[in-house]
Image 1 (cartoon, helix red, strand yellow):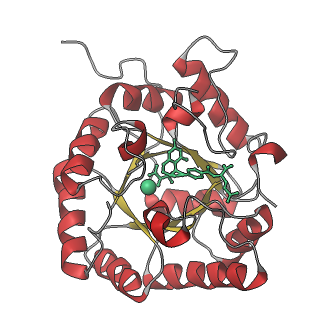
Image 2 (cartoon, rainbow, N blue to C red; image 1 turned 180 degrees about the vertical axis):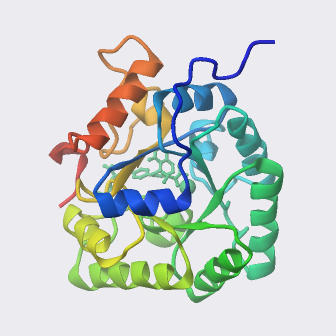
Image 3 (spheres, rainbow, N blue to C red; image 1 turned 60 degrees about the vertical axis):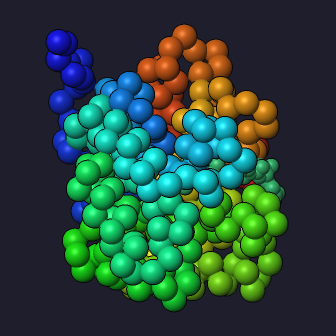
Length: 276
Ligand SMILES: Nc1nc(=O)c2c([nH]1)NC[C@@H]1CN(c3ccc(C(=O)N[C@@H](CCC(=O)O)C(=O)O)cc3)CN21
Ligand SMILES: CC(C)C(=O)C(=O)O
Ligand SMILES: [Mg+2]
């Protein structure tokens, strides 16, 4: 038996309060999605701040055309595998489709994701009244919550596709109001996906919790990408906001290091990864 992460450099453990301090200090937060033990170990060694077991696993791991077929069992299984590869990295897992239908189901899902899976935080899409109730219920039971606004992929049928959100003034104002509402409900982190860069900046300035962007422009407090997109292995078309960091490099470790460096120094996202 080899020693797990024997080469991992010593690093301070990333915590939820620690992320808030990073926002206050203007230090960019580096986040990636992950679905298994081996890649998690590479992310730990690369010093990625936050790892997300995303329900995007339905698309990039299972080959589905949306995130809707992903079950709570799938999320718990992948979370447990990823957790074994991490030590000082903060682990966040998505609540899958319909596990957020009401407070009791969401509490059950949170209990399994944190208890069986080993995540430190759960992520939930939207700001509907029942979602705000769930955020508060989880927070009261000391399960930290990451909100997710903008292009929320579980709303694909409502949106009519994976469409950029918040493009007109009313829609943008609504996203800002939702961000304030999820913060007031107790969310401690916010993923903002698929919105114009101007709205990414407005939301980031409007809340005191860190905002992690994906296709939300360069002014967010951090960035997240889907693992398969940033390694260039996603079959077919990748979202415009993603970038292949393995291209021109000779290892996954080098790709993770380059991504972390470019997020921290502001080189990523560049204008070609952003929406107006
Ligand atoms: N591989 C992968 N990467 C992701 O970022 C991702 C997933 N899968 N699955 C779950 C969701 C779905 N996401 C997506 C998927 C496609 C687009 C997309 O094609 N967007 C168009 C813009 C459309 C518009 O202008 O309204 C694009 O050109 O990027 C965006 C987000 C983000 N998430
Ligand atoms: C794209 C990120 C934010 C996500 O929710 C996922 O990977 O499921
Ligand atoms: Mg997701």
